[in-house]
Each structure stands twice: as C-alpha cells, then as structure tokens.
Image 1 (cartoon, rainbow, N blue to C red):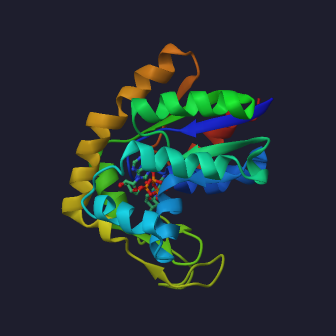
Image 2: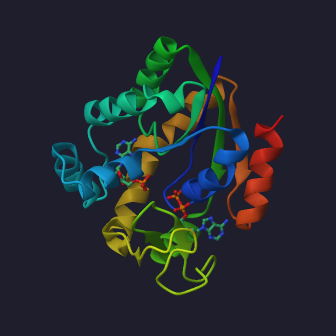
Image 3: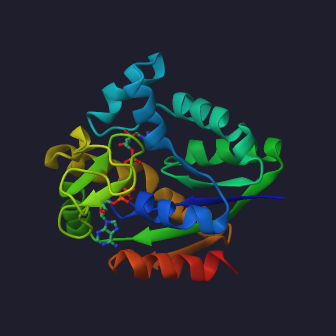
Length: 216
Ligand code: ADP
Ligand code: AMP
C-alpha cells in the first residue's frame, strides 16, 4: 500500500528544508503545494496568475484550485508508491479531500509529523530565507548560509528573497495558519497518526527526530 506523509507546521518552521533532507531516505517524492504554485507563477499559467493574487497577500489559495492541482500531481507515475506532502493540506476541507483522493489512489495518510516553533523563530527564519530560482532549495543568511552568497550550493542558480517573506506578509501568513491550518493538529491527532517534533532545534537534530519515527 502507498505511503503518504503530511508535514504539518507553521510557515517558516522548516518543512521544506526537512522534506528535502528526508525524501530520498524515505524513497518518496517531495510534493510541495507552495513549490507547485511558484512553478505555475514562473511559467505564467492561468493557475499561477490566479494563485499569485492570494500568495502575495499571505492568504490561502481557494481549496478547489489547490485540491485540483494536488490531485493532478499525485496522479503522476512517481507518486504511485506515495508522497511526502509539504504545505498540503492547509484546511479541513483539503484534509477531507485528500482522504477521498487517497482512497482512489489506494493509500492513506500514515504519519503526520507536526513540527513546532515559536512565533519569533518563524519571523526570524522567514526574514532571512533565500530561495533558489531553479528548484526551490532554501538557505538562511544566518542559520544555513550557502557557501557562496546569492548562489545555490546544489544547482548553482541564483538565490532570491520571496515577496511573501516580507514582514507584513509573514505576519498575515502566521495569522492565517492559526485560523485555518492549526485545526488540522486536532484532526490528525484524533486519527492517532500525529507526532510532534521540536522545530526549535538545529536542522540536523530535527531531521534525526523525524527519521527516528518515519524510518521505523
Ligand atoms: P517552511 O517550508 O516550513 O516554510 P523552510 O524549510 O523554508 O520552512 O525554512 C524557513 C527558513 O528557516 C529557511 O531559511 C531555512 O534555511 C531556515 N531553517 C529551517 N530549519 C531551520 C532550523 N532548524 N534552524 C534554523 N533555521 C532553519
Ligand atoms: P509555502 O511555500 O508552503 O510557504 O506556500 C506559499 C503560499 O502558497 C501560501 O502562503 C499560500 O498562499 C499558498 N499555498 C501553499 N499551499 C497551499 C494550500 N495547501 N492551500 C492554499 N494555499 C496554499
């Protein structure tokens, strides 16, 4: 049966960083809804143009649009054995839609690592984040700097600061997280598949804590 893992946690807590660290070990593709939206924005698609109006304000993209995009992604060949989901679901409607989708794909959500972090940590991490243009690898100017400033260590592409990492948008994204996404903590806890990992630790320690459970 296919394995689906949902990485839960507030914006900036380190979901993308961790997903990139553990996807290969778990033999699962990293499916990030934020990366998929940014890819669409880069390619100037209709979906990208619509999503951008919400992303720039720190709001969630409407559920139907987001669910449709994820359905298409999960139906591709590389997701046959499962996926490591990062940034999706973000609402209860999305979580319910995911359950239905996975019935169709012959799988279920097996684990939900919930990475925790204080608000001041999130603001500091997002304020110093630099993202790679080619593949979305992320760095932090203080906590995880690239070898050469402004250049991705992995693929050599330029790094940029996301528009939605501006302080006022970050604060809105955190509010939206508490209002719309935090209810998923109880949703998955009730299903007995949630486990907490302290995100206020080094990147390496968070990776080790995640793998200690997920590799079992
Ligand atoms: P998310 O995907 O949850 O929004 P990211 O993985 O993009 O978060 O991380 C946000 C920022 O914080 C990035 O600049 C990243 O390099 C940095 N970061 C991630 N994890 C840690 C950590 N454990 N300690 C310090 N900085 C971190
Ligand atoms: P992220 O890369 O996960 O930080 O997401 C960036 C932005 O994309 C979010 O602030 C939302 O505007 C949008 N987004 C990403 N995932 C979702 C989702 N599951 N539902 C709605 N909007 C999303």
